[in-house]
Amino acid sequence: MKKDFFRLGERDTNIKREVLAGLTTFVTMAYVLALQPSAIAGFGPDAGITDINGVFISKSALLVMCALISGLVTILMGLYANLPLALSCGMGTNFMLGGMVQAGAVSFGWVMALLLCSGCLFVLITVLGLRKVIVEMLPKNMKIATATAVGFFVSYLGFKNTGLATFEGGSLALGDLTQTTVLLALITFVITAVLTAYKVRGAILIGILVGTVIGIPMGVTVWPGSLVALPDMGEIGNVVFAYDFKSIFANIPSALVMIFVLFTGDFFATFSALTAVSVQTGWADEDGNLPNIEKPFLVDAVGTLTGSATGNTTITTFIESTIGVEAGGRTGISALVTGVMFLLCIFFSPLFLMIPTCVTGVALLFVGFSMMSSFTAIDFSDFKNAFGPLVLIIFTTFTGDIAAGICLGILADVFIKVCTGKAKEIHWVMYVLCIPLILYFIV
Image (tube, rainbow, N blue to C red; front, side, top):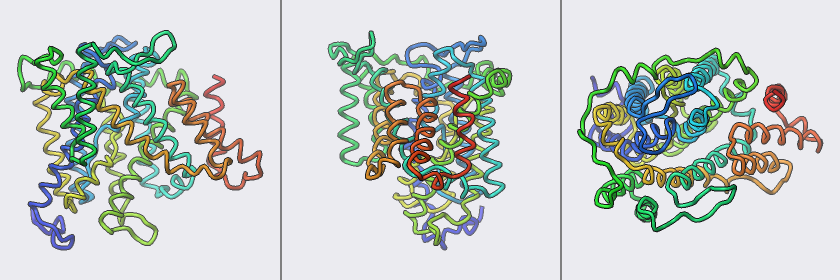
């Protein structure tokens, strides 16, 4: 492919720099492959989970499809948008949806059907050019609070799965540090913390790898029979086109709320990543947006669509892409390299599946922390603007119900502003949205 296709000279870069940037991005986000299977099928030694429809969802199939779609969609981003951005299963929504499947509340097909609807909505919004309306619809504080609340939820899962904290009998207590798995989690936590403090790129992934290796002599890590394996097409068949539309029509109000939650999460995660990259590179226009921003938005939307058809939760642009940009990535070549690395991982699934639960749980703590850090950006100077975010964060954190927390947060934000004479500050779409949110609790 010709060099000028990627505009290397115009963007003052070269192939060597792009390759290194692509590898850097992959290293910083490859932890997704270790977390995604457990997010959906549960932590522990089990090979998978059987949902309420009796369909067996294997961790191996989830990992293989995550690597496949992450690779293909990231390559599409490089070729179509010519941007150094990488995509994969977004953290947060995968644990929320996976938790519902594991609890037997919904089927795996129900989750995939909702993601299909969310992806279709994303494509429609992008094609019609309604991005600005969506950006203006939700108040800034509510956008920040949503990410913060999900961060608390992910951290809760981290403490639970590592054993560093126990949640029994309705009480919270420190875990038993004499247990081998808890001790390994603590060691992994310290290692990852030191690497993060020194700003080592790929600190989370390195922490996972080191913790897994240390777990071998401790008897926690189970060495696989083979380091390389071909995908099991029988298991993959259970996650491909596994839509369960019947369950959606059985409870439309709940489905509408979840579609809204999934769409906004994907939309603003992508918007945040694109904004960060545009600032980093100096490509931002007079409105602070990335030129031709519709292209990466469309790739992201297509990613969620294809992801739902292949057993993946929301495929979104990763903020870790900024690490690759910092390393010099300026073109789609960087994305191509990252995508190819994901594709190679399809054949190394046993390596990722051997990682102990207590080690992947530590990664959740650091992912949750990175999401919670946005809490400081919430403006608490005006209670009318802070009340909604406060309700959203508190209810999500202490109930573990993200959907209910977001619903209550939005309703609280609208309610307090209407009661204090700020009704005109609320976007009209928010008033319409309140209808299904109220029905969510009634029905």
